[in-house]
Image (cartoon, rainbow, N blue to C red; front, side):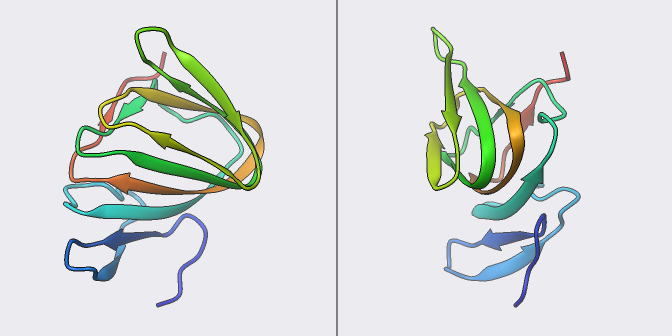
Length: 117
C-alpha cells in the first residue's frame, strides 16, 4: 500500500495496517496511528492529550517546539533526525519554528483537544 504526506495508517493490535481517514485519523481506532505530517503553522488547537498511551513525534525536516504541560511546563525544540516521546496523559502543544515534515505515532482510540486560545 502506497501512502503520501498527510495520509495516515492505522496499526492494529493484530499487526495489520490499514489506511485511515486523514480528516479524522484518530476517530475511535484502538491501535496506533502513523501519520506523516507537513506543518507550516502552529497546531490549530490549544493543545492535545492522549490518555491511551505515549505518542512519538519524529522530525524529518524543519524545526518544532513542543510544550509538555507537566506541573512545571517544559518546552523542547526538535529538528531533523530528532524525536520526542510525549507521555500518556500529558497535554502538549506543537509550535512550528520553521516549516516541518514529521511523522507521528499516536495511540488510540481516545484523543482530546482543547479549543484554540
